[in-house]
Image 1 (cartoon, helix red, strand yellow):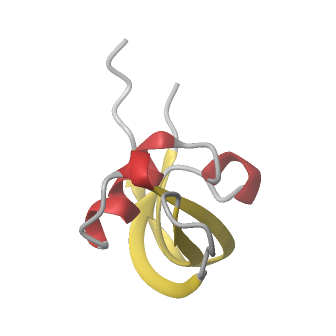
Image 2 (cartoon, one colour):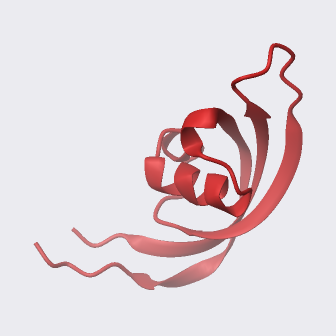
Image 3 (tube, helix red, strand yellow):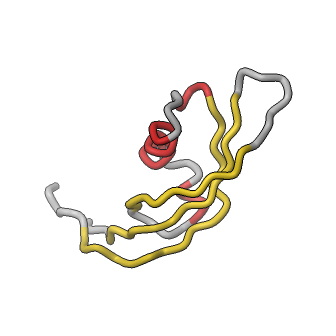
Length: 82
């Protein structure tokens, strides 16, 4: 099944799991995503690991909460290999 590829600006919050007081930092990054649904992105390990890598952190050490999505445009479709 082919899916559209979107270029989007993601607004999200990030915090450290290891601390007692969780200070949430507001961040904004541009990323290619495969869906425009906010609920799916909060549980998508591919997107969350890319955001963790952009912040030089391990995904197992931080919490990421995506707040909003701003779609910039659609850049084609994924390959239908299987």
